[in-house]
Amino acid sequence: MTVPDKLPDDIAELKAIIRAQQDQNTRLEALVASFKKALFGAKSEKIDPAQYELELEDIETAIAQVEAEIDADERTAPVRPPKPRQTNRGSLPKHLERIEVVIEPERSCACGTERHVIGEDVSERLDIIPAQFRVIVTRRPKYACRSCEGGIAQAPAPAHIIAGGMPTEATLAHVLVSKYADHLPLYRQAQIYSRQGIDLDRSTLAAWVGKSAFELTPVYEALMADLKRSTKLFMDETPAPVLAPGRKRTKTGYFWALARDDRAWGGDDPSGVAFTYAPGRSGQHADNILSGFSGTLQVDGYAGYNRLLKRPTQDVVLAYCWAHARRKLHDVIQSGVAPIAQEGLAQIQALYRIEKDLSGLPADQRHAARQDRSKPVINAFELWLAQNRARVSAKSPTGEALKYIAKYWDGLCRFLCDGRIELDNNPVERTIRPIALNRKNALFAGHDTGAQNWAVIASLIETCKLNGIEPHGYLSGVLMAISDGHKQTNIKQLLPWNYVNPV
Image (cartoon, rainbow, N blue to C red; front, side, top):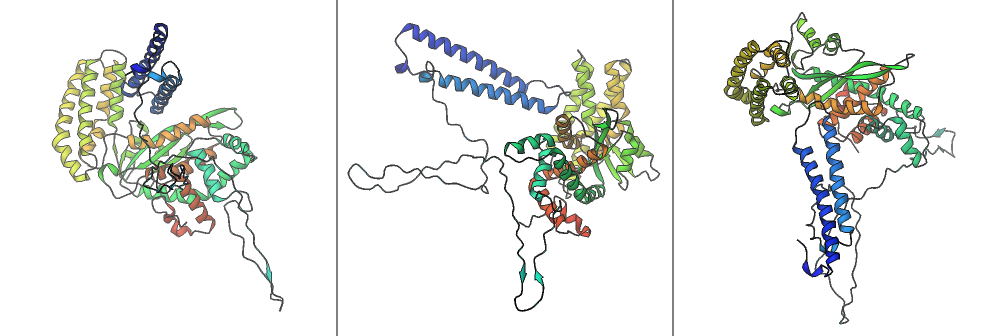
């Protein structure tokens, strides 16, 4: 709504204002349309979800730029309606340091009397100080007795992860979090430090990371052992390009993720994930990683996991992933008109709607509700599957998708018998996404050992995230505890969900 009193009387000026507003409105309308399409439109399952976030932030940035341009335009700014006050969508935690700035008005009144306080307006803004470096100077005075020759007294030097080296444990934690949580390769970190006059060679940072990974390995092993004591886990794998020494090209290894996430049914065990690097994708690697585990393992349809079913003890049961079944049908629909695939998707969506209602309920209640609500859907789906497999060619895209579902049918239906089992493998896939993002930024791991170091540190960082723990504070405290001689017999105390920073 424009303000008539502020409009000029000249017709040419009025036309210029209208044209400017029309141009600005057209640009905003196009951006808003793009924003809605990115937010609510169809999304390919083949595209990394992070790409959508990138698209949204670029569109929002463009909208803000156009609005700033409108406010700065002397033709349209005077007639632009006042924008409503924007509420802060974030929050300013109470633990942050408060720096108070008091802006005093003129306190003397025109009548000569000094004004008194009747209230105040308070606003808070977030202020950021770029990462600051400081030097910890440790002095150890030497004392001697003047009365006798009792010897010299001096406090022992404190132990550190890098003995006699430059970094504190907090510095090591910063390098680890920057590399494995914020996806900054070491050479980029070295460039950032150099801007503040700290010249650290990349190889020096690499030595710090390697030493830290070595010291953290017992904590990682305790994490892996704790996960394998569970009787319901998730597992997945993702490629890990690794530089092949002497061949001037990369080879493909794999990160195997073993995860526990019982939040959907209110389990008592804390969430966690442990990554393991292996040079291949053979089911033998999964079998080795799961040595000592018995129970239900939820996985995708990769045939390598079938090796677990051949154990002499037959102590592993596989539950399969409905998201992968859904993806097979979704891909068929993307290639053209496919009414059968569309019908299948609708039935799978019905299962997901039921699961949404059951999220957070105890396992026994989920089991009972699934028997009552999900089992009839599964029975109808099984009949539909058999009928339509007989109607379509097994080699057609639709036939291939239906064949996939039929092949894994027993494992797909296992969720009906156990309230702890999820419909899909998404909890472990979410833990792998940061690994994939780090892989894109680092391009490849430089060596098999480097890839396993990656797995060790990423396991602790991602487990911190799953439990709402700040990774830098955790790693800093754990490294300090290790340097102070924390006992191996009490290593469980250093797991993310057990560790309490004494500072």
